[in-house]
Amino acid sequence: MTLGQAIAAAAVGGSGGLDTVVAHAGTTHAGTPHWLLGAVTILGIAAGAGGLQVLRDGTRSDRFGAGVLSVGAVLVIAGTIGLVEIQIAPEATPDWTRLFPVVNAASAIVVALGSLVVVRWKWPERPRYVGLGLLLSAWIAYPTLLPQEGLTNPLGYLLAAAVPAAVIYVFHRDAGAAFPQVLTARVPALTAVVTFALFGVFYLFSAGTLSVNPDLTADMVGQGFVTPYRVASPLVYWPALEFYFPSIPLSGYVSLGSLLLVGILGGLVASNAALAARQLTTGGSVDSPRAVIGTITTAGATACGCCAPAVYGAAGAVFGAAATPVYWAFMDPSSPVGGLFFAASVLILTGSAVRASHDPACAVPRDLDASGAVEQAA
Image 1 (tube, rainbow, N blue to C red):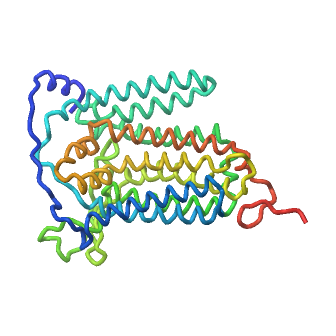
Image 2 (spheres, rainbow, N blue to C red):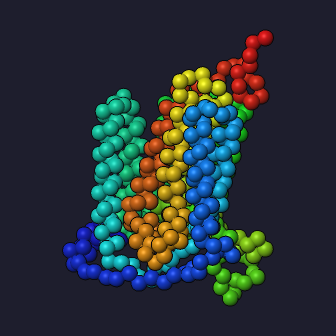
Image 3 (cartoon, helix red, strand yellow):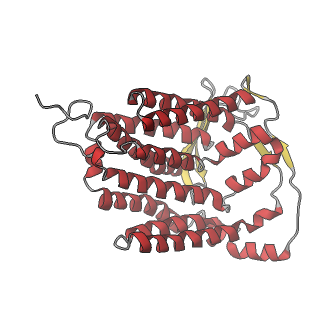
């Protein structure tokens, strides 16, 4: 539905009920109670918060804090993968969703104007920040401004390529040589690789791209397949491969669009993690070498908001059919929620990485040992 159609529909008015069916109506998933999956996720969040507090306080070794934080991340990923399989399938589209395009367009205008005002106020010498903000506002508004949601419009592909290009340009201009130097040290580089891999797995499962609990039909039972496919996300149609491997079991698809999103968000999260690892290996050479970790945690949670089925699955496990509005808020392509979460993730993570790259704790001297720490003079 385009913006014009939405305004016309809203003028006609009308109200309708929410007819829903529960696709996964039981209280267990693969033999595991839903409350246990939720408890694992909450325990992971608590462990992550505890590890973060240890790193901030410095009362124990950084390795202990990093270990607790890592365990928390693994628990959150495991619990979320279980919860994302719990889905409530709405049967009919509620009438209030016709207002989404209007809200979407308004949200895009706010993001665009906000970018202009904030950059003019704080960084008037960096107009590239305005460019990034305008591209992200266009990303938000795109599905509502073009006919048929712009699924086949070449502008969608151009926009999908322009956003990561703008992020790379900002890194190149504002992080300079500082960030590539951080990756020359072993610990930050290894941290970046591991973080990217974990985020990729988490994103693909929580976004519903992969599933270990596929919905099988009578024709699919015992039959594996790999077949070409098309996926309408993000923004436009992307070529994909749909697959099902019954021996694992694993089903899902891999598309160029999903790889693009993993590359953008995973790359930004991994970059921040590498910078945080570099700060930690300096042993507190500045007043607050761990400050970036709080930003990573906040921005990581924001990035997870892009994984709509994860949010919806968790809400469905707790509230049942009452969580149906969450489905439409996150899953409807004309809803601004997913685009706003994506834009916030890109802005926060990019800003955090640029700031951290100029922290004295991230400076890499010429003489390093194998771990990336400064060698001591004899």
